[in-house]
Length: 112
Image: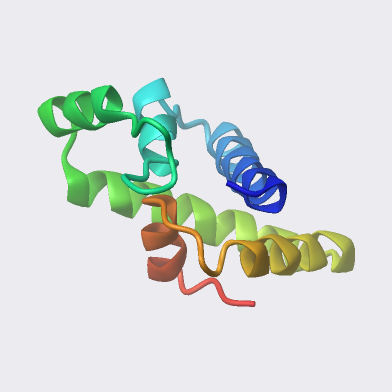
């Protein structure tokens, strides 16, 4: 994984956690690990998180929760040119990346 992709993933996780805190919501370690989950770009893939997620979480509820947090974080940051540009920069870096979080970025209709 390139440095730009790692930084971009870290940016999205930080925005997700920041918005959750602002909304008074908790993001568990498993939820965070699943956001970053990839069968192809992690060596080895985080199958423990995936197994725990499948046992304890409802995928549709999780995706809805994360999608809504991303939408609010993105909307809030669009009011500031600098943070708006950061979103664009990091989303461009992730355009060919493979990880679960991009499913929710797409569902949130966040584009660059």
